[in-house]
Image 1: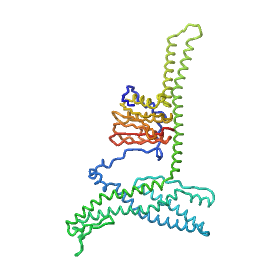
Image 2 (image 1 turned 60 degrees about the vertical axis):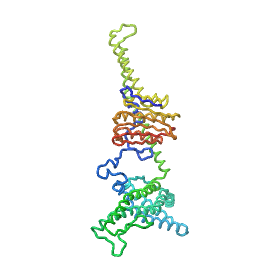
Image 3 (image 1 turned 120 degrees about the vertical axis):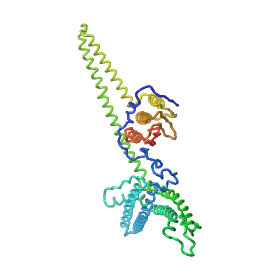
Image 4 (image 1 turned 135 degrees about the vertical axis):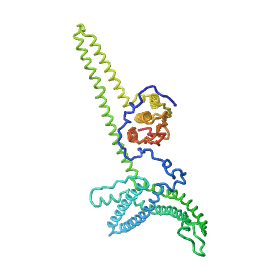
Length: 487
């Protein structure tokens, strides 16, 4: 289904968007369904001579590359000390635990190794967050009750502690690889400085020697050239420059492995993350329901109720003017005015009740999501191209969330983007209902900027959905909402 239209209705679909989807602008907690796509400045857009270089040549001059080198340098001694201490405590504890006399002491040493591993894990998480931007939530600390043996048993069953021990043991070879990756930088710089060392510092080979050697970061092989003249040192400099161009990618490969280990072993377990996510989404759903009830109560009290009270008063006044049955009406014009006012109040009360009902459940959804989206696109003041491929109808709750998300996103396009056209796509693919709104506006859409995106994130999280935003400065903007077809 494809529809391109620019509606003549001057009112944008913002009234529909004030339904449950348009939540307040609270900051959502970290969860899989709340992944934001806030605009991050592309390094290629930054000013400076390095910004005009190709990505391959620019890599050694980026802040990210030097932060990864610093991470490798600081992580190696921490990995060595941590691995040795944890391994010693764990080995002593395991050895004593199998003996009859030292069993209790052995278990205490095992628990000490778990606590030490947790402390080292906190240091590694902080280092990764500060230098790599890899922020991993710390797992909860067990707080058992009871006596000493109950606390000892709880510590021994601490899955996060055992994962921290695994990280401390695996981190050492990874940190050694990181130190080797840093060696590429040092050998590249050393070879690059060969002409300077020859001409300025007079670091020349002794008589009878083969010449100034070119250092290779690859431990196997041989045949590296030796410089016997100043001109020959420029060969070493070229090799050093090539090594420096490769060094950031070698470091990044090691860092990628380390990032995966940090996410897999130093964060909360999958079950703990799922429980926390369910607790947060349940709280959001309760708050959202309470907000909807408050909105309905406020709209009824301040809108329709006032109109109905005015209607009743106008009818009472008209009744008094009419007098007793059979008597002539003394002031027919005044009675007619009162009836007109009552009629106008009744009409406005019906309109407000209809709008309120549309905010809870749009009547257009009675015929399915495709027709509802077509109505939404037709009412937009910005031309919207509509593409819908939903062969199987989702559950009513999912349809309602998808409709209100589309209404809020189209409203954002109208109010904030400055776009000339937009595209609204809805498709059911791979077991997910994907709703995507793109526009050719000026971009820069971020949650928490008054655009209702934070509320949409909270709304889709209640059904394990996800919202992804891509909106670089200058546009275009693309917002994708993924929802399960069944709530």
